[in-house]
Amino acid sequence: MTLQQLQSTYEQAKAKKLALDMSRGKPESAQLDLSNDLFDPKWVTPPTAESGLDCRNYGVLDGIPECKRLFSELMGVPAEQLIVCGNASLNVMYDYLTQMMPHWYFQDDGKIKFLCPVPGYDRHFGMLAQLGIEMINVPMLADGPDMAMMAELVKDPAVKGAICVPKYSNPEGKTFSDNVVRAFAALQPACPNFRVIWDNAYLVHDLYDESDALLNVHEAAKEFGSEDFFIEVCSFSKITFPGASVSCVAASPANIAAIKARMNVQTIGHDKLNQLRHARYFKDLAGIKAHMRKHAELIRPKFEAVLDILARDLTGIATWTVPRGGYFISLDLPEGTAKRTAQLLKEAGVTLTPAGATFPHGQDPHDRNLRIAPTFPPMEELIVATELLTVCARLAIAEK
Image (cartoon, rainbow, N blue to C red):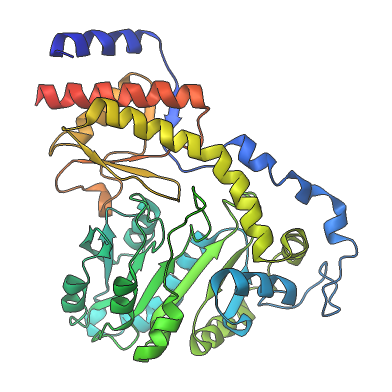
């Protein structure tokens, strides 16, 4: 299209007064319906765990045995190195960061820095910013973060840790290679309490039967004696109900003991009835994977529709990721055009995650990255929104 044609197409779309949302990676209603059977009282009847505990009552801070066993199979970590928590893994991560702040603060004049692979997850950056932690950008390469850069940066004792999504990363959908996972395990940080928040949010969120494989970081860490570095979290938020699921933290025995000591005075325990229903509903890893294939059948066509439109309209002028799982597609436009593209979209009634959100403090140094979240809108709206996105991108590029 010529610039005049693009402007005309854009004005026609704007006149429709659209109200479309592709801003967050939320499951659509049909995905949530897949788990409606969890409401059946049979999953909590009787309300007694296999240990004999009445799940309606106080007790058991680290989770009931059958739910720990389910997470153990899912994460590949011994049950004794797990704590089953409440609805959101984001809460678990925030809680752990606040737990570690006193240990970090009284080292090196209170300087606390974290390494952040970019583009990355905006909520990670929001947590760190709120806690006053300085964030250092580490570029994402084809197989994961630039580990040579990271190995140099951890020589600074003020660098207390890193935070990342190792499988189907947010927003690029990349999975860390075996070499990258081993490089994490082999890091030699100057900080004695160095921690990596290993946010394994999409460990079974495959779009295709042939899934990406992620090396078990806890096993890799044993080779290098770095087991204490890693705090892994995951949840059932995009497996069952994002607003009513269970989450889990996996860590070394020493770290689990420290977390339990804090929990003893912080809480009387998480929702054990929810743990019980999830454990009985899925039974094992095979049950989880069968359930996730149903999710894939619903959302794979949406990803493919977006990718087809990008290929048709933006080939040669932009680049994007082609993920095999997760919840996002990362779009890189020519430098200096992402904010303008997002602004044009917003004025035409389509909401994206704000341009720059995939970088700390919302500052994309090249103003080129946009995150596309295909799952939530109905297919018809998704196609309209994506086609308008490509019009706005070409218009922004032409203007520049």
